Length: 157
Image (cartoon, rainbow, N blue to C red; front, side):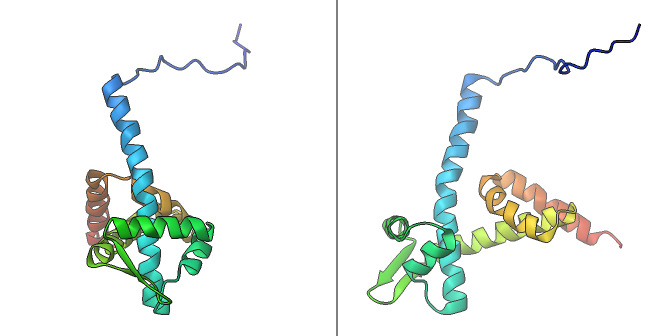
């Protein structure tokens, strides 16, 4: 007689990593989230400076969808970290370190978008998904993405 039970499929027991390994993984994710915020700000400030000639905290807040107070707080953190400076009535500017970080972020973003496009993800979704993925991928993973994209580009079409 055939089994007609439609209940959930039994999965094999889950093997948890060691506590140290799991704690390290979660710690890496928390660090990436904190870094992602700073990276989003410097990338946006660089884009505003390149396209509009200035990056006002009001514009940064609007484009990131945060309050003006939140933008000011994070910009202050960027200044403490040596990534940005500001001038009265002139907005925010990036230091050399801030500009270098923005360029690294932009490169990672572009690579993740290119990978997603190569996998067939529609452009608008690839851009949106890259915003999160770019901050959480390790250097090892990003290097693998780069090798894959270069290998794919070298293949005859």
